[in-house]
Amino acid sequence: MDKDWTIGLSSWPKGGKVAGESELAVADIDLFGLAQMVAQNAGGMVSIEDAHSHVLAYSASDQTADQLRVLSILGREGPRDYLTVLRKWGVFDRLRDTDEVIDIPAHEELNIRRRLVVGIRHPADAAARAPRVLGAIWLQQGDRPFNPDAAEILRGASAIAGRLISRSLDAPSTEALLIQRLFGIAQGAVDVDAVATALNLPKHGPVAVVAFALVAAEQPTALEPTALGNILRLRASSFRGDSVTTTHGDRVYVLLPGYRSAPAVTAWTRQLIEQFEAKRSLALRAAIACPVDDLDRVAAARGEVDRVLDNAVATDPKARVTTLAESRTAVLLGELLDVVGARAELHDPRLRALLDYDRKHSASLRESAETYLRAHGEVRIAAAALQVHPNTLRYRLRRVEEILGMDLGDPADRLLLEIQLALHRRACARPSEASS
Image 1 (tube, one colour):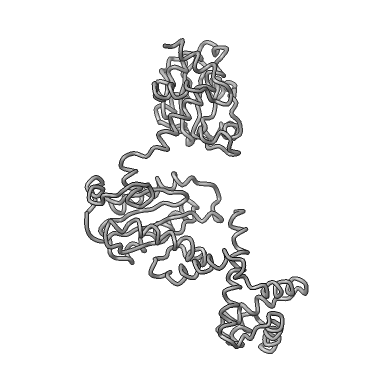
Image 2: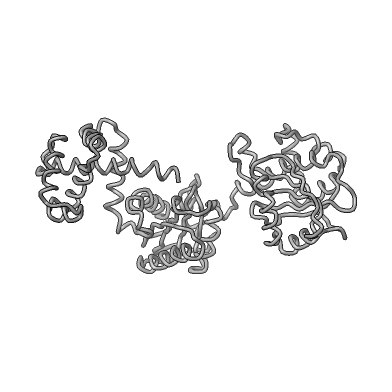
């Protein structure tokens, strides 16, 4: 069997694909078995870690195991001091940037022996510019040098490990699948009574649904949605032991059984977001549907909180937490703008003339018109907000009417102009969001 595995691993091409052989390998072995086989065939001691340096599996050790290996296995993750050193050496950057096996020389002063390491990537991302790094395979040298084909064996093992890890990540557990169906994420019929029994949830009565999303423009560092979901699951379970959590796309959804008090759920959500911002420097926004009449309404409630995050919170960036009831106007207005924005024939070309005039003359007629409309036609209030004389604003408004061919005293013209200006603001805001 060892000989067969040597052939299977060492003959694996750099791209990591051998027809039929990879699936056989995945079916016949787990990560611990893979670690032991690599150790036997490459020479040395193996540990397999995830993307956060948590130890997933390892081969047998002997007396030549260095302190880094011993501490990593005992603590189930790489020691922080050693990880800092490896980060300074650029090891983790190279693992992200290359598929090649990296040779790390011994450092006697740190009691670190020579190592070979290769990244583990998601097999579905082979052609992606930035493939997902699932972890790494580390091979520590013992008393004897590595076998001559150690690098090839590591490359083959990386491909197998990628399939093993991705399969466990991509295939949700039975419980996770039930939760996703309850939220209307996974396809398939939902027997709410059976789901409630399986998840130990009350079959009837109100619940609360909370959706969380990162404010991308305000994040100092990237955070995977799965990692955010794990953190929020712990916090939700601390608040309510029978809560359930799932992640879909870039959002995390929490179900709180037995809740009919929107203020209580809002207070918990707001406190949680404040703590994340203060202690973890993570900016979150949240939308709440509460109370939701019954479990069979959870999927519909998820759709509603998605609408809030898509529209209401985006309309007011300062609104970190909002409920569906509080944001109905903003949601409907946002969706109305989506409809108008998607149809070019509903864009008023007269607004372009106003924008061109501002750009050509370094003027601020658009801002003056927006402020006037926001002040409900009160010239003195708008002038004070703009810090100009009321007569100056009146002159600007006459120029706006001339350029647009509109009568700002006509409610229909004012309504149309407000809609067109809102579309313009949205179009100006979205490129900056995409680049953040």
